Image (cartoon, rainbow, N blue to C red):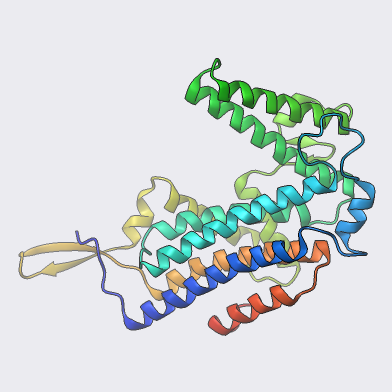
Length: 311
């Protein structure tokens, strides 16, 4: 089997163009954060939430981390930062012409992080329920860190003990903010009437909101997209076989396999990353009421490279 493929001039040109878009997305995120510092514009949904959710939160005694409306900013910022860095990784892969398998791994995690950011901001809920969504994310993260430290180092190790302290602190914060919250329900992903969706469900929800706004991809199709990217990420046979071709090699007198991917397939993966990140950044921009100039500049770059992208 060959481990290379001859790229056409058109393919090379498009790869570089898409790499520039991935970098533009990453740069747009950092420019947005550096320009607005996660401060809500007057009259924005974020400003309305901030009026209800002061930070520091008076209901929480241990204030060693963000609380109130600043916790919402922290959670969304972290998801978008993660997605933007993976977009930088995609740019590097496309520039180096590594396009057969690796981009799908980064595309999947970009999709997941953007979906979680949109889950926090995307639907119309009151401030208390939006905060509950953030605390569900915080609790899940703390529990994952605790479990991982236990398995890697054992229960006597400093990293595990620190993770236990952090997990207990998060639980105390949640109980202080939402009296009556139970650990068992939190472990089931439930707080108030909010539920933390699984990875696929969060992606489907993001596409559902986009469809309501005029998007053309259904939840069912979103499930298929996420399933395929997951198959490309985890050991699954069919994605690799779909990109393997055979030809009769007269020199060696036997069939030789080579890896092949078409321009359309590469563009479809690029579109998933670009659309999900633009969508999440757009939700964030709208929630905070920031001017549209940075987002509009990014939109113009995407549309110039992929005409009709937003239709």
